[in-house]
View 1: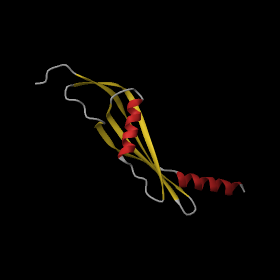
View 2 (view 1 turned 30 degrees about the vertical axis):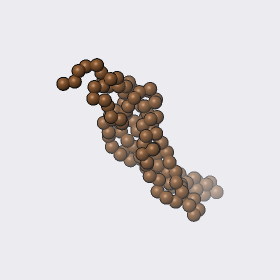
View 3 (view 1 turned 45 degrees about the vertical axis):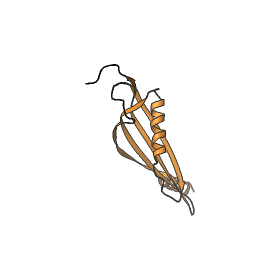
Length: 121
């Protein structure tokens, strides 16, 4: 009886386990002003999750903006610089339905920017 319970728990764990993919690096989340002084504040992370039934869960621009906004808000900054993007996918199989989920997360350096007073050449 214990073996059946263990096998059932292992099957559920394997079925729900997802995979994380490194998507890439980006230089900046927002456009910096040409005459701005950008000062790093510290590390920041943010994420957004979306689940769908029977359709593939895709990352939308709203999810990207939400994750970046969370990361920037964690340090009260203005933009995220030199950050990495990650995507985690997992599926929850049910009898006749599959629930597909995706998590978009970012990790990087939060920075503030101040409009500079120096004259541009």
